[in-house]
Length: 334
Image 1 (cartoon, helix red, strand yellow):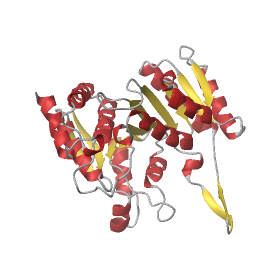
Image 2: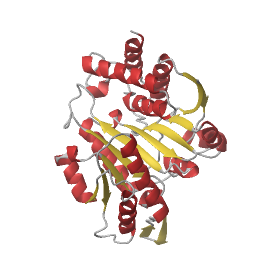
Image 3: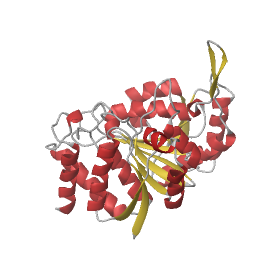
Image 4: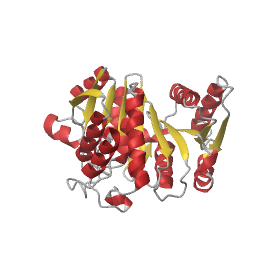
């Protein structure tokens, strides 16, 4: 079966790691026609908007996109394009598996958990304004609709992936109305999945528990801002953001992406680690039903990591981005 997939190379190191990922996916034998589009600063310069309508329409038509990292100006300039893309397509579920890779020094080499983050509201939506000079107000919106559907997604994910427990993380002891509503919706949904144990933890305690005993967690469901912070924390437990995949999923489509930044300081040098975007590509392949191809690539990647001879600079090696891709392709075709 031939698939048509929207390809967004991204900024900085994005084009390099995306190109390496495309090579590996094509080597697996999957037939894909890539529709390349740009968003972010490049699109603003060329089209006068950070998210061209053509890009949105391509994703809606194809239902699937693979996206490299994007640069977001800090404290000025245009608003987050990632946030804008999620809003435009209502990609309400952010999914970030956290699993340690073989032969990579990290705090928890057996760690295997999944973060499910509500993706459309909360403080992370960036609804803020100046009240008077020197006073800024950020608006936190939590709705029953969004809280219920992300809880349902988390339980359905746990069920389909044979996970043993779902944990909600919140600050309902202080934000009794907003986080209280999120927690209430979580437990209402949990009633429909009696076979899956459900519990909750206050977010600050949850972060401490993640550092001390992360093995107690299976699937975690969080509001938008907490999910953004906790997913990076968990990536640090297995070696960093360069090893963590991610997906944004909704009814109109799914965008699979590397969760790390665009690393402009090393862009163009061909030394970036493409693991995160490659693993996001594996999630994408499974999403479109190409399970055998995903397994071949995953086995090849794990073999490369286990041998430890081909490693990019961030992991103490000397291999370039293309070398890493070539090593995986060699294992696929062996």
